[in-house]
Image (cartoon, rainbow, N blue to C red; front, side, top):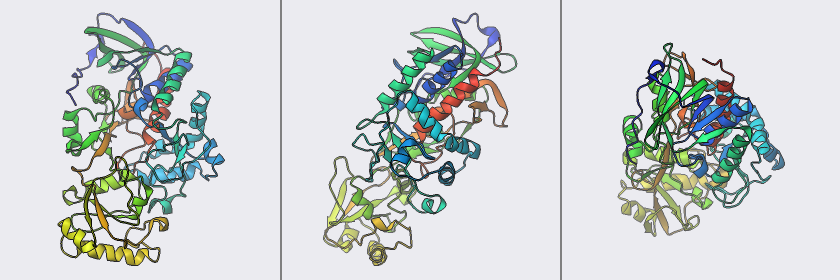
Length: 488
């Protein structure tokens, strides 16, 4: 992580000698949110231009697995026999969010099927199939995946579980294909892109309306006027060490690995804040310690430095990762036996193997009898298909009674923890940026990781909510800006 170029104070309109370009809608950042905004803006007839700091578009969306969290009864869900509704999806996401924006959640859930159909109309392929195994990423081109905590307690009691992780049809990561299809649609609609161009300041008139952007391109200043609106879609801030130090210092812990592209430096959020935009949930992030596949490891138990369980092992890997971080000293170990352990490429480090739980307890330097007691209690109930402490699903309950026994290192600061930030600007459902007091900043919109919409915490995260959120609310921001009253 290197220090990003500084974002400057807003430029007064009176101090801009001339605008080199003038468009209706100006988009800062051309990843999943930016390209979706460009499609809707250009389709609405607005002259649309996107400024991209990198040498090409795509952002973090283009390097993602291309999971989109969609539900409510999509074509793929119906084909796979998955029963779902917008209301059940809403109840689940509401339970996941630490501080939910209920209006945005409901819009997202009620518009989910239509958003899926919109993607299909642009040529984004989805296979009518489900990958049923417990995994972080399908190794096949199958579409549906159980990509969150839907089947874990307490969520399974709050909403009917449904698989909603829709992966674009391609083996492995499909982000490049998703962005390719979206970018082609934006080009067909008439949207333009200017790469190697970094926005450095917003331009405001005397009333405080955002009317343009000052950018840097190959060492020269470029001023672009936006007659209807500027949309900030420049990514999160996981690559900005100073912003992490201020807002999410946990992500500076050794072995915490940022997920993103070099331009996820917080510049879009800084631009919004420079004109009074309120940045919210800046201390929230995605954090994970994927200990599966193999799925059989779900039958093990997590314990902390006191030898005590602290989470249901059938939760989504992000939720478990956050609970591991919260343990004293960040210490967390996955305890498995011969009956559920399988070696895997890129799996957790095995730090101890012993013939008995008592010996494993000593090897981990846990307080005497603590691990033994935790395993005894777990085994006694698991033999009857029960987990009264953490309510792990019956399918993952098996006594740990087949020696040898092993401990996998999952401690925060020792194991590798991928991460990215979730905080962003406070916005209306249409992308309009708001101040701390809830007033709208005229002419300014935000989407993607520059806005704080659906995903808001590691403990409640589900794979696909970021790309789903970025494309869904990017579209809304593009439509809102294109419909705005022009200032000139």
